[in-house]
Image (cartoon, rainbow, N blue to C red; front, side, top):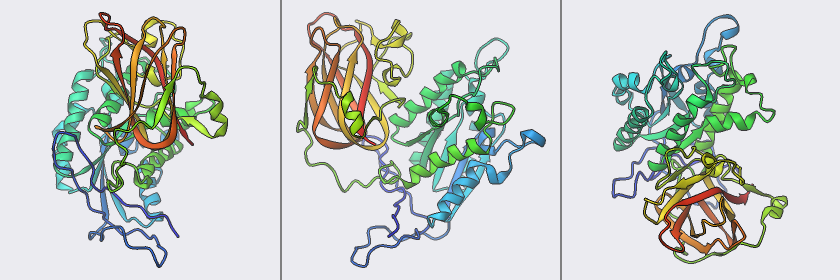
Length: 423
């Protein structure tokens, strides 16, 4: 029996009472059920599934002659359509990529997307936006990039169109002085934040490329210009996109019929003594590693991504997540695990023993809807809290609330949050 795929049902946009956009399944899957199985998928709409790919030259499929060439059949658009076809989905992917474009350039043609009447839009910008000019400043300031990109997302969702946001691939080398990962990273984190806030799926190419390069050699995924992905790089992008369509717990495919009935019930207790690292041999993995998160507040010189970077013993202030004493409690962090995971343990690492805090951990399948997992506080001399599940819980989001534990000192400093789940 083939695995069936349900596409884009009841995508929840926000917890503020806005309507949930519904996107029709554009083609029946070639999936067979057992004779006794009841039909669970809606009837197909007529015509192919239409996907609009909106972006820059990476989306367009950068192509020149000779060693710089990339054929259309090597682009992630073609590769994705082929993979969808193999599971019975007839997809038409419109090439909305324009070489050299930034989000500000793209605003002028954004409304043309609606003329295509797409079922879903894939958005990827950032490489050109972050590129430094002669004065060393990015072509598009980070604040303008965030505002424009989020505007694209919201306008599409308001029309009931599904959205998949993608981060740009990393730079394989920092030899191009006007375009380095130092320039690019703030734009990567901005895209991640927008995806979490707006409850849409994220294909994190920046992370996927780095994960694929186990030997740290990213160059094999790029054309000789060291900016544009080659066919191997486009395969990584296509695989990331395909996983969204294939994953039953993605925002596009989420089925809200199976809400947990245990909301508000503690399912595990906190301990600052037990080390869960031994559990890794039993098939657990830190699924929070490298994943995006949003926070209620942080100091401006606190580096992005440090709570999930795998470093538990920071060297300097910039290596930790911290806030000033002027900001009120409670403070919070929400980590997006990228898809629904079977979570078994959560570990919170404090960077300074004296900054003791009360920690409450929540889990949820959907942003804004959480079950309380448990509470505990750091106890000297331990700088680690480990929460072990009594029973595994299905979750995509982990929320950590931080409360004051002794008064008058509101600053917070945390080094790392780990979420251990089945592989």
